[in-house]
Structure formats: structure tokens, C-alpha cells
Length: 234
Image (spheres, rainbow, N blue to C red):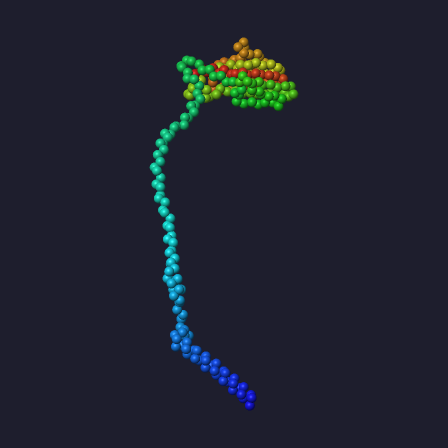
């Protein structure tokens, strides 16, 4: 009987708790409390804060100021420099000659046009403009040096009627000789000292060939200071 009494008391307590809970729920429903599924309205303070908060003002992008194009100032047009004609070298010509007059052309000894030098010889230019041809007795081969009248030294169109040549210098040793242009008198001077004026003279050439030659061999020396060509035009 005691157990039935305890069970009845527990059942009665549980029933009382459920009844109280039901009454509380009913009371809340009638007083306008929140119901399930209703969305909560924001509180007045939250609304006020939301309405008073300044909206973010977008910052206006500053467009770059267009740099005004600077028109280039008109530069003064350069004054054209007049073209200067490049001077052309004047052809080297000799002196003009009057009819019946002669022309003299001096060729320095160092202005030879050809030299065939033996292995025991040498050809040396000297300060005066002349040339020294020398050899020894090591070999007997001869050394030959040649000169000619420069064509550019004559006036254009000159025709030669007569050609004389003075070969001026000196010599010593075993053997030396000089030859004048073909057709002159004498043809050669062999181991012969020059005339009193210090020159070997060759006269009366036709002018077709102006070659003058100096030759030595064995132990010899031949100095040629200058050649003086005397031209008689036609």
C-alpha cells in the first residue's frame, strides 16, 4: 500500500508541473510575445543608429588634367650655306715659252726613275737633293741609275726640236761613266772628269728620248747633284 501511495504522489507532482507550464505558455501567447516563425524586428536603438550613420560618399576620382600640348615654336629655318666648289688641283705644267726661246728644266739627282743596284753597292740620297752611288770590290757587278725628263714639266703641246743635257756632279774610283740621251754628242763620258763647270754635257738630242744613265762597278763613287735639260721647241 505504501508503494501505491508514492506512485500516486509522483504522478500528481508531474501533472501539477505540466499544468503550470501550460498556463505560462497560455499567458505568454495572450500578452503578444514572440511566436514561432515571426521575424524579429530591429530594436529602436538599432534603427536609429542605422538611419543616422552617414552613407559612404564615393570619392570622386580625379581625372588627370590634360597637359596642354605645347606647340613647338617655329625654329628659324637654317640659312642654306652656299655650296663651295672644291678647287681642283691645277695640273703641274712648266713655264710657257715664246717662239725661239728655250726651256730649262732642273731634275735633282735624287729624282731618278730607276736603279739596278748590285749586292756590293748602294744608292744614297743626300741632303742637297743629290744622290751618291757607291760600290766596293767584293763583286764586279755594275750598278745602273736612270733619269728622265718629267713630261709634266713642259707646257702642254710642246714639241721638242733639240734637247741638250748637263749632268752635274763628280766621280772617283775604279770605273764610272755617264750616258746622255740617244742622239746626243758625245754618247758617253767614261772615267772622264766633268767640265770646268762641274757637268758632263750631252748636246743635240732629238728629244724623242730623254734618258740619262750613270754606271759604276768595282770600288767607285759617282755623285750626281742635278741634271739640267735645255729644250728648244719647234
